[in-house]
Image (cartoon, rainbow, N blue to C red; front, side, top):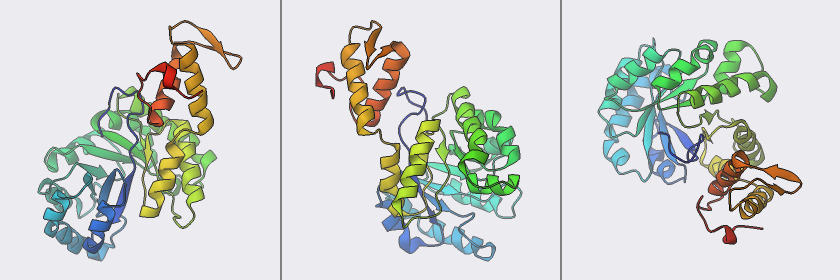
Length: 285
């Protein structure tokens, strides 16, 4: 969840949620191909099952330690009767990080990280107060994520592209200003049809998001496809870097190419798996 030298977005990050009270599914989730698994003590667990879910998570310490991917835990929100015990459990587990829901202040983010043994915090922006404080929160967190469903409920608007566009963009801007990796977009509730997952991932990529929260293993592949560059983008990037190999401004496809355009082309090729410093003669044409 830390920034890299790959540019504002950093590497793609697609974590998968799993209810913490389903230890029978842990192994399958760890092998699903996501970039991380978030064991959820919050929304996925009913109020009456919180203590049992936490106990199941603690009992699975060895499975968490042996997981083939990073494991995070989403605790309950600040002010809930469960957060203190959730944070204590997180401190006792071999976790890659902590997911803090309904983050509304930098102080709450910092306090949660300390209580969880210094774990890095992925802060969910999912309320009006959270959006208003997003720039401060971004400086305290390792990374931001956008909780579209909860935010829409808090604002009383539709969970749709246009009503939430400004708030998504603010989350991206806050992350950039804080020097953090690009934030993660919110979940797509449906998982049987891969098309909406891929479409929403592609839209998130155009806005500057660096990943997406997932709720089902079937969403991993379409989300990854949505964040990947299209064949046309890869071909364009190859033409740009082949033409601009000496660093001068040149024309490609009827448009001038200078340093910012070359940076965009290199970013596209990195997303496609082509090293940024690859031999220009080997790029797609």
